[in-house]
Image (cartoon, rainbow, N blue to C red; front, side, top):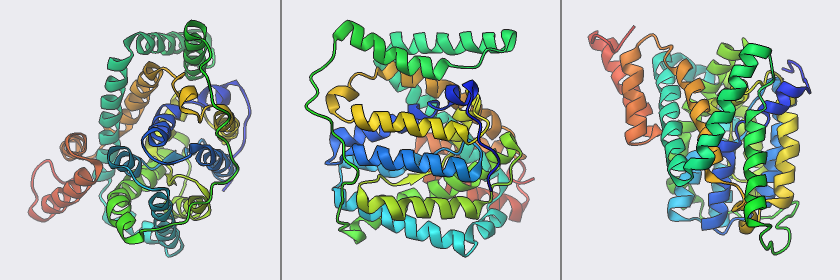
Length: 367
């Protein structure tokens, strides 16, 4: 499966492009729940490196967003989080082994998947506006840096270091103006064994809302985007097996439930990532975060505005591909539903509308 590993300036520039979605989820979970993100970041780094070597393209590894949102909104114990990761891991490993995703690819219409891509783009834009509102100065500065590098790249072929500069610069300026906060020791550990518990509660509260999002965005939309961007045949079942292994191995030892994602892949591509070398560099940086940025005082060093600027351009990159739908009206309805309600509702509605459009030959709902 390996397509190549390149370590160069472009891969370095792209390595932190997806941190705008990774870090807010994990940091928020650590602040509202009894969850230690040091081991979670270590496992995230390890799987970033492994998947980069295996797939040979910038393959994102991200915390599962639906589970993260539920934990942030309502809290969950470490045991419940571990149980949800184990359940999802076993489920998607079996899906991949028995080629379930290959079957789902045949029955889920392509415009539905495009709608999920477009919906995620809208959700990322909404999230970016929230960060922008909290910190407009940093956000505006970040947008300016990205536009400057876009112009320099087109004009002089300069590698796009904007994501790296935005994150490093944001932390540096915060330290310059506010000084180093008091950090009560390094919140770090190789493993943090969490005894899984409440499997039934975890299945209902955490796992069920995550499954449609993982199928649609982390697997089907990601493999489609890999073909769009890299002309690579990354099978849906290989992504399912990868997600299964990541969670079975990591969840019992402090890892947060993880998956791949079309938004992360678009982010890495947008900022110059073309090989698995992007993942190798990202893994090293994540290990640094695991060492020095897991204390709440250290987390506060990262300005919210820098995430806004990164998410805006990631959303635009992803939305561009979502608009390549054969049935634009259907994809837009799915995207708006996902934005207003959630991704699961948009996905289910899309399937129902596509089936009705095909059966009754409804204009704008079938190709």
